[in-house]
Length: 191
Image 1: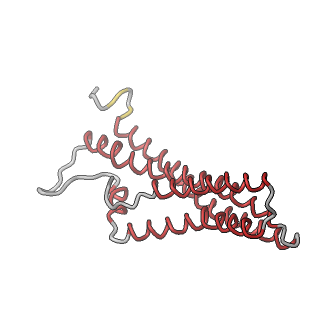
Image 2: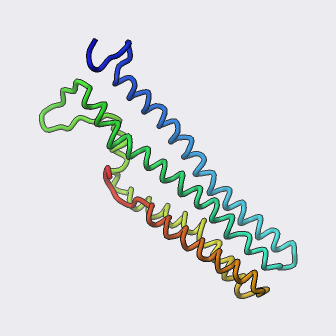
Image 3: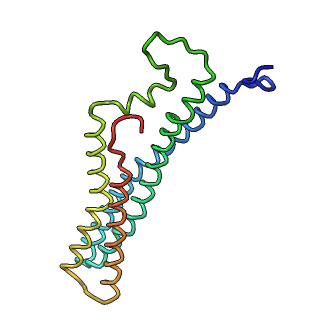
């Protein structure tokens, strides 16, 4: 029995099985994350429809920021986990599998496994795409609720409680915006 097998199971086989499981998790998270954009747009539409049906009760605008922040935070957490899975495959799983594989690459070429995990990050347009996605995320999860807060601030009603709620909601939306920017991963390459 070699060091790479135990009871008929190879280490390489286990690593490939791990890869398949985490890629399935990543795929599920991508679908869930992307649906959060639609859920947020539906929430915006619902608040606007309610506002129009209630003769302009602008206090209803204060419903939009907490919904947007909740959905935006869930989006951000899932997006970070999707990126973390990609990093794990590139930085941990791929080198471990490569170390046990017998690879005969031509001179001057580096062997890789799971090449797509590396290749898609080298795309010349990746940074532009990521910036545009950040703009969409900020608009969806932050600009819309901030616009609702500004409109509420202009229109009222201005009670102490509603102003306090608006201030807290503004802080929450700004916090989400900062976190979206921090986690945007605008770099090219494996990092």
